[in-house]
Image 1 (cartoon, rainbow, N blue to C red):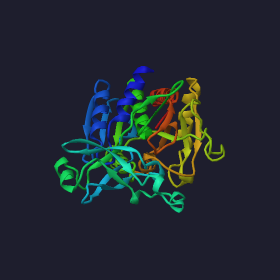
Image 2 (cartoon, helix red, strand yellow):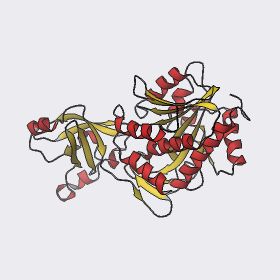
Image 3 (tube, rainbow, N blue to C red):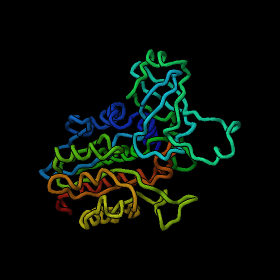
Length: 350
């Protein structure tokens, strides 16, 4: 567990908004190099690690990018305006510390706002929108920003560290989808699959499933598994009928997401995953989601279609800087994918 926590910490704390996944890609490449036959990066930036086997091929994918921000404008007084990359809930941004990843070195700042002491009562009742927020890095004017290399297009991430909570739970930023990345890497390390395995770190998932679409088209696999996170509903404010997944009760297998507008997993994929879980006494949960989707939506519609499943780590407070998950679910998910890959050819035909 300690080794897994350390690996997840490296992944979580590495910066990597959509289109700027280099740091995360390097960590994954290093972790996989002794367990695959080839690692390459395609034109869009996807990491493709190939473990050679039989003619049948399974793609196992997890997205490298995280939701973040990007510099839009620096005003005359040095305050930074930004745009959102990915699905932020604006209230979670306010008063956070951030890192502006300038080419000349990281610059720390805060997302500022008017203090409540001088707010009028009507102002206190209003939600501050991201478009009205700004970042203060302590400089005096635009010229200082230029000297630091801060300009439009500079990526920004939250300044957060992964911490261990009680029990087997951890909290940090970007667990969507660095937990999925860790689960994919662990599955490849553990499996003795006879089929060819493509372990793919996809890019730009949070802004349109872009890397999944191009990598799946290029690889044309026989089947695919997406390694992800899913909304856990076991905390105040959510009714079980809206989100039934719980931490510590095993990985989630997606039956469908976005009310069928995203992935509808085929019965054969569900049998493959559920039979594997039962055979190896791996706990699991089933997810039927009305909102949100994953790389599987793009992958399963590639070329003539790719049978696709999703294995997810239930996670609280998704798309914030304080996402929480249970490491036992991650471990079980990795074991489930590893054993499922081994079943292809012997008990499962693609």
